[in-house]
Length: 290
Length: 234
Image 1 (cartoon, one colour):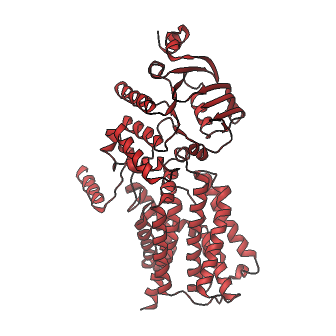
Image 2: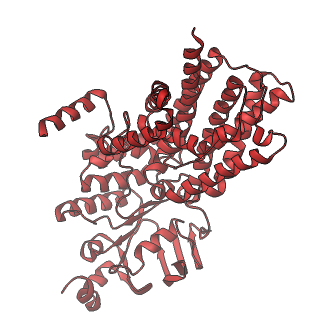
Image 3: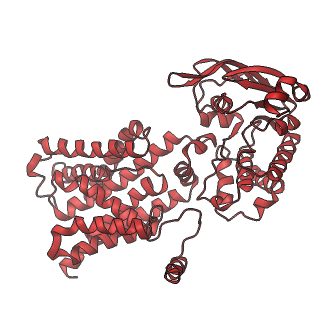
């Protein structure tokens, strides 16, 4: 396979892992987190150090990275998830910046030089397997008792609590799971590009993942996949005008808000099923109304 | 069954409840009436653990529950139907009911209760797969009550079940409340519609600015001059 396309596919795979894990937190549980890239960086640095310094096998390093990210997710989640809406967004944003700045100043992470010479372990097989595992695991969670609780919290936290759902527990759990898979994404990323720098996982990256989830459709598994795919491919197609990338993101988001606020496959208010045919009908209806 | 003693609660520094006391015995329908903003909803929210009392105690079946978190209170057998219904709008009717049984693990019994709720609310049975947000107001209220019943509560807290509903629908809802009570669930009912509340309940409490000012049987309150003037519009 052409190296360029291989790299694109691998990036899409990593982004699918990132977007679908973020979708669990934002789309299914309704907690607006803007620090997803920080969990990715925790996974990336931990796993990279595990293979570089400790000489651990790749699989074990990935797992350690994911566990460390998950632990941070839980530790950060416990206090911040008491906050709602915008406040939670700001707190997670702050957490993301803290992680970035700490990595920028630690010796073990190479500071501002970044971490170089990470062994190239990630290949297509690893990525595709982990995408499938992530999808399978998240799908199982969403369709379980836990998933019900998460949905209930998203819909109405007070009502969920009065149904006997311990919202702090479930919100923290979902944050931990989201961080775990973000950690895996980070590990794959580090062992593909072989070089990581704190700024690779900045605030704008968190926003990118948010865009993928919103574009694809909040609370839809395939939505996150489509969002990740589109927002990985489109910037590649627009490589000549790479500087305009974020501008295009902005425009895409504004158009989405205007035309289809729930995302490409997202669930609209008051409808339990969402099919492409219904979307098609909506468009037809709009044209007729004109 | 439920004993509230000298209960005070507030939001930040504002005291809403000032030392209220009330009791509910097994099998009763007890109503708490009063006009806007006197603390009826706050009382229910404190009992179900959503608010912390600053003073006083709440005993349920001889157990102090004044500092038990809400999800544990549901497990003890108190289920709260919040004001404005608070159903989960984007989930289906069935999913809403399933979440109601969240604290329970006895699948067979849950299925039985599901059937029972469907019998009490035939209108919901027809709409199991429909998204709850698309139900009418009356149906949403039924769903909220049905969802609360799914936890098989011993005490059901109902907050303004008549709110925003057509008079005819209100009558239907209150018939259902009586039926639920006949099947063995104790009910504490908060209502602004004093007329229908007192006709449904066995006993009643009248609240005014954070205090309970009257407490009597429902019939006696219906005859009470003060109540007739202030709440029954006579």
